[in-house]
Amino acid sequence: MDLEFDDEQRLLQESVRETLGKLRGRPEDELWAAYRKLGWTEAPPVELAIILEELGHAADPTPFLASTTWFAPLAGRLPDGAGTAVLDGAGRFVLDADRAGEIALATAGGAVVVDGARVRAERLATFDPTRHVAHVDVAALGVPDLVPAVPDLALAGLAISTVGSCRRILELVVAHVKQRVQFGVPIGSFQAVKHRAADMHVAIERARALAYFAALAIAEDDPRRGRAAVMAKAAAGECQRLVFQSGFHLFGAMGFTWENELQIHLKRAMAGDLLLGTAAVHRRALLDEEAAL
Image (tube, rainbow, N blue to C red; front, side, top):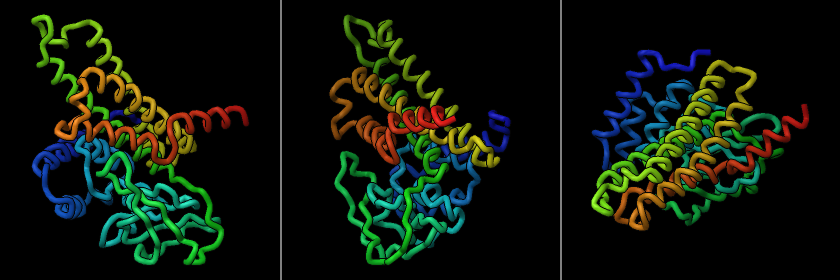
């Protein structure tokens, strides 16, 4: 299992970064159309992870994440309209369910696809207004045997998107501590500030490595794919907490104002931890699995 990017993957990474830079500030429908035209929605797991990391870094507002990972039981069968989502049986906190063209319902017999217009979805007001999260009621559809089911790709996708958000937080913080002056010198020269920034970097790289390992395990259908996805989601959540706390403290209260870009990425990172279970939930699942062996 090769954990290094090959030349084509590095080229894809550079291309995605360049494209997102050019599209920055465009309306959401234009972004979504561009992603589909570029073929990003059809990318295999590792290449998809590369794209998702950069979209997380850019705080992408489109339903790309839900369309390409929460719809994993029927990957490749994307609707012509907006995003899609995978229902977990309870139908709570389903990403982009309020604007999905189709929704895949997980049942004991496999995935059942229904028209999004037939599903009653209520968008929730959350601390991150850029995220579409909804409670879904499918009782009237009469679909039997709904079961809790979270695709491995959904966990890995959320993990790598969260890593992208954390990367951007660190970049903004580093730029800030280089410019802000106290006692006649930039605060970035203080040892305590350097240590915090270093801790943020280490946490990001650790979570990033686990997320890409999960994507590679999924791509190769490795028996460890489920465990790898859970580990990636747990590590991303732990990374988010450290980066959120240190980033907020180093940037100062102004970083959480609406006028500052930092608050967008702080909220995105926290949402990435909360959706589909926090780090604590997945750590507990790993311990339970170990105990059962």
